[in-house]
Image (cartoon, rainbow, N blue to C red):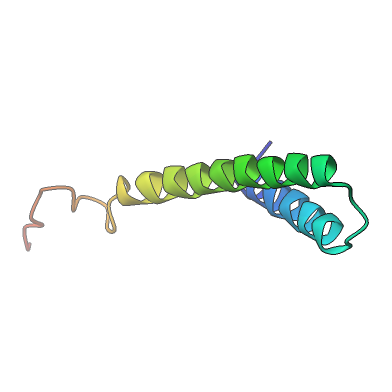
Length: 73
């Protein structure tokens, strides 16, 4: 799964579970299971965002700027 697809999928699943929880049509055991699923999905989404931030921070803003000064000609 590509990066945007993974995060989008996690968000869609969270939205679906939240809508199911808001419906008020669940018994207590099912609601508790959905809350656990939401927590797990939210943790996965957070980990994916952290991974993307670390990856973006490791890429130099300008080619050759990773600890090197550009020499003028």
